[in-house]
Image (cartoon, rainbow, N blue to C red; front, side, top):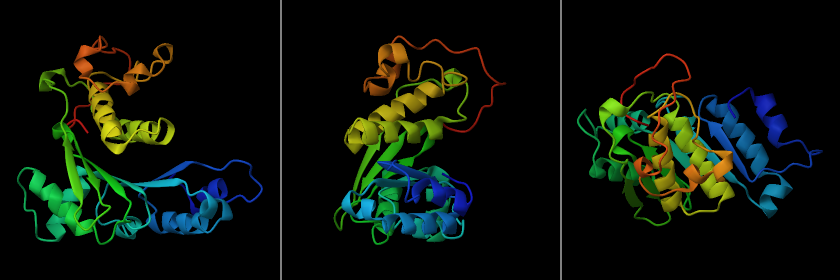
Length: 240
């Protein structure tokens, strides 16, 4: 959700609605509005009795109020660009490659802000993604590499990040998988997205969303044909 305050609030705070969400995802844009909606929603009786999962996307560093949202979400989706600028602001990073050590520094730098039970998924382009599980004073960091894909096979990376987020919500919210399995599948599906234009076959109904539920290398699933339908190819840096 990324719309105006009243619109967001009406979706989650209608006392007369029978619908109660199990997961709410916010784009980190109008951050003070998002913060207000989350605050209102967490005050509901339904939330106190049965808390739902709240996730936030951290895409652009420096947006007013975005840093505060790290302390109120259960799941954080952190873009590589956000993490780089975050580390640069702390004088930790000045260019160079993203390494396990730098991701660990990001984890330690945010562990005082993030909820104790929070999980962060950090997408790092062609290098895949990292999972940060806070939980204790020493965050646990795991790396999930992408499948072996030749750069010449990458057709369109636009939408891969949103694909990753969508799969995590599906995998953890609906399938109830743990973060590690959800992360592996999300990296595979987002990588698969980069091999085609559009989203055909990513969640094929005839196969019971089989593509979303696979953990093995996407190049072994027999679905490596590329879609020729869609807009003009738009190449971008990295995969996620």
